[in-house]
Image (cartoon, rainbow, N blue to C red; front, side, top):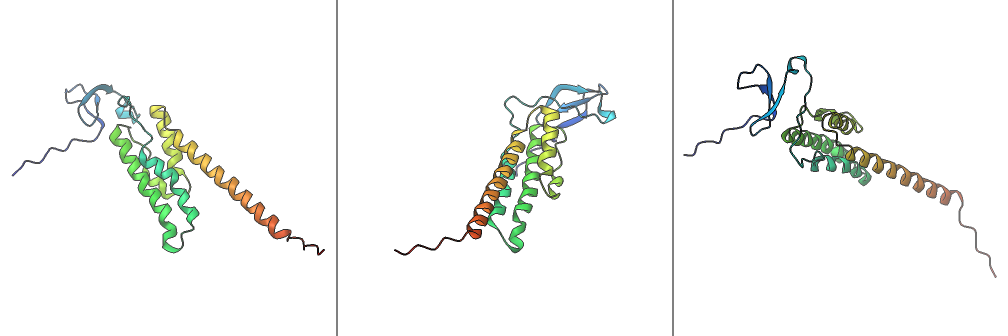
Length: 172
């Protein structure tokens, strides 16, 4: 019979085990040299992320692309698929950010609110905490702008072709 591997607590601020009376950052693998006295006031202190850490997770890029599913005109219950997928991807993204060491990432439940509330809130939190994370929001905005412009052009072309029927051919 094998002994189960111990589960390590998630990254976060915990009481310093050395007894300093301060809170110390646990990165999920071990204690760091980051301390805070601000814990009791509720201030969020973000220690630096590991070198090369990428805050733009696979999940956020899939969430950015999820609105493209609406172009498929899924009907009935399937019409909820992009919405449900966005909520799931937001939850996976938040979990990935927490594992990366981001202190209190924006909560995934905001994805239940229509529109890009999670994406905007995530961007604000990451920009304040780690100074990065703007690319997914800018990509989403560009994608939505492109869909609006292309949709507008398609509407104009359809309106013009229906308003001006083809002229009759002249007989010789």
